Length: 343
Ligand SMILES: Nc1ncnc2c1ncn2[C@@H]1O[C@H](COP(=O)(O)OP(=O)(O)OP(=O)(O)O)[C@@H](O)[C@H]1O
Ligand SMILES: [Mg+2]
Image (cartoon, rainbow, N blue to C red):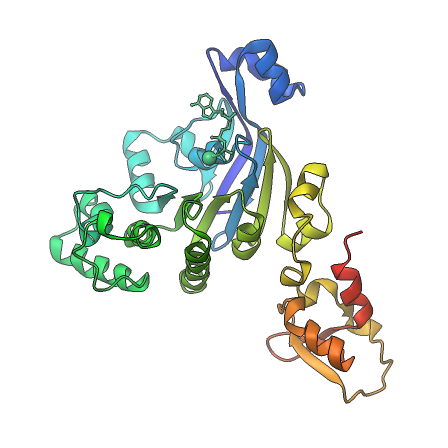
C-alpha cells in the first residue's frame, strides 16, 4: 500500500471553485480559466503515489502548483475535488482530533524560511513538537539532544536562531521535524534559501540521514540537480498539471514534452545514468563466451561517471553485478556513448 496517494486532485482558487471545476475537467488550461473566470487553477487532475521509505521530488516552475500539492498532504489545503490518502486512509474524512493526530505524529514539515521561534534556543526549538505532544521534559531533552547531534549541531543547543548561519538554522528545522519521529517529512523548498555550498552539504546530509531513517519524504524544489540527487521518483508540474512522473534516469532519457526537455537539457547525464539502466542483458554478452582480462566489475547502481574514466582509458568491458556479485549484464563503450548522447 502506498504511504501517500493523491487521486485525481483538483484545486481551484477563487470565489466559486465548484462552478469552474467542469471547465477544468473539460480540458481548459490554467491561462484560459484565469482569463474567462478569474479563478486560478492550483492543481489539475493530479494523481501521485508515494511508496513508504522513498523520496518523491516534485519539481516545476514558480506557480506550477508545488506548494499547493504538498499542502494537500497535511490538509493545510483541501481539494476542490479528489482524494488524499495517507496509509490508505482518506484524510479528508478526518475530524479535528484525527487531523491533529496526523499533523503531530505522522508528519512534519520543513520550510524554506526555516520557521524557527526566534525567542527559543536551538534545543527548545527542536523540542517544540514533543512539547506539543506533552512529552515529559526529560524525554524531550534526551530526544532533542540526539537529533541535534544527528544534524551535527552539538555544542549549539543553547544558542538562539539569530546566532546561527542559514545552513545551521535549517539543520535546526530538520532536527525539529525529525524529533517527533514522523513517518513522513514534507519539505517545501527546504534548501532553496541556502547558498550553493551549504545547500550541497544539506543535500548530502539528507541523503545520509535517509539511508538510515527511511522516511517517506516529499521534497519540493525547482532545481533539477537537487531533484536528481534526492529523488527516487520525480514528478514534474506545469500549470497545475502533472506532466511526467518517473525515476531520474527515465525523465532524463525520455522527457515527456518540451517543458520537461527544457528542464533536463543541460544535465550531466554521467551523474544520473546508472549501470543497470544502460547495460546489455547477461545473454547479450558481447564477449560471446570469451574471457576478457580487461573486465571491470561495477555494482548495478553505479553511476556512469564512476566507471567512465577507466573505460575510456583502458577500453575495458564493464560487467554489471548485483549486491551478491552475480552477473546482471554488460556495458561496452557503445552503450556508454548512447547513454550520454542527447537524441
Ligand atoms: N491562496 C491562494 N489563493 C489564490 N491563488 C493561489 C493561492 N495559493 C496559490 N495560488 C495560485 O496557485 C498556483 C500555484 O501556486 P503554488 O504556490 O502552489 O506554486 P509553486 O509551484 O509552489 O510556486 P513557487 O515555486 O513560486 O513557490 C499559482 O498560480 C498561485 O497564484
Ligand atoms: Mg511554492
